[in-house]
Image (cartoon, rainbow, N blue to C red; front, side, top):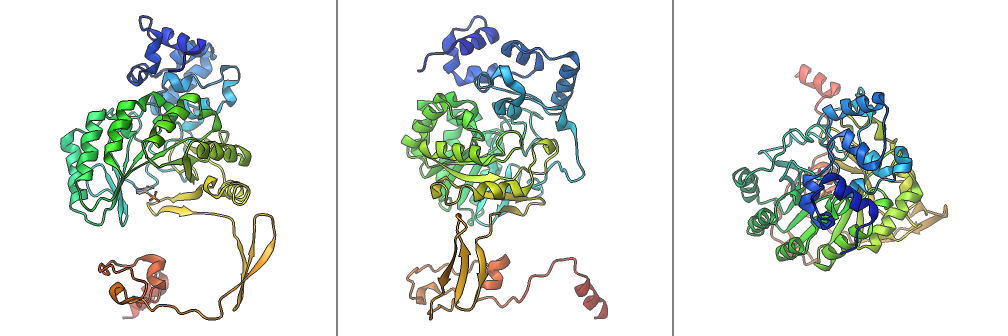
Length: 437
Ligand SMILES: *Cc1c(COP(=O)(O)O)cnc(C)c1O
């Protein structure tokens, strides 16, 4: 274990006079001693707000509560706290109370797309399973801000059984994402049970865990936890680093333990004004992640949840960031930039344009350096007419399950469906036809 620095020792002493410094290594101690009020925050960091500031922060915290692990708090540089990326992610801003015209409580319609409590089923073959309503740290930019701190609630086995039952009865679900809250707020025993139940469902091919513990409480990644997770492969994990400052020695150690256990890891960052809206910063972050065996997976445009206006950048900022990554650094250091569609449309990738033009025989493309080049299309191409009868096809897939329905643009492109167009529900021209009929 790394020895504690003076500040960490002072935090242990300041929060828990009787506790020995070694408590710092105990994740449960951090949860029990998370900072939940403005005054404790001031006391530990040696900052004094004016009465006016304190009243404004407390008013925000009434609406959107505070919870900061002592570990995450220790990453704040108190001298310049106002500009600190860790401070901005964990401490309330009075601007959270600004609600703008387009803001929504549940912009992603996670509750509307919920067939049973705890499950969001949006995409054909995978579900989001909310297995805890708890987090060790409340991110100020949380997309589920409406729910944070509402009720501290971990569903009991019976409630989780409803979600499990839905998954068991839905054979199309081959990928289950455990989310929350943070699934690592569950005890090892409960997680072991839950993962075991999922392992037992034949059509579930892979389970993923979405957790911010490696960032906000790396002490949670214990040997016991990792030994248990190892027995549930194939298991993937996505975490949430937003700033290179978060990649501490403790975090690196937690990531190494997970990677050594054979768990492939991805990272989902959120693009946040004043925290990480900088090409160079995101590049550094992604390179650090890769160095620690974490693949940058998504960079999210900030959602339209209430309380997040001050964090939003225009979409153009994200495109500019991707422009500065693709080609400039390793391909696996480039995440997919996505806008999660308001209304439940799911994640939509957004990127710079690389196709400049397209003629009968050639495509004109540009690269990251601005070189404009051509690609000659093949003179002939033996295309396969696809009737979804894979058993007769020369490509030797030999899958007999050809009954899946095509949806969306795939449906328009495919050979086996003769749909000509997709028409929005509200369409005046169609209404006129109906009226005439
Ligand atoms: C993000 C998300 C998923 C997973 O999407 P991937 O692109 O497969 O990572 C699944 N369900 C919901 C509701 C989601 O928001």
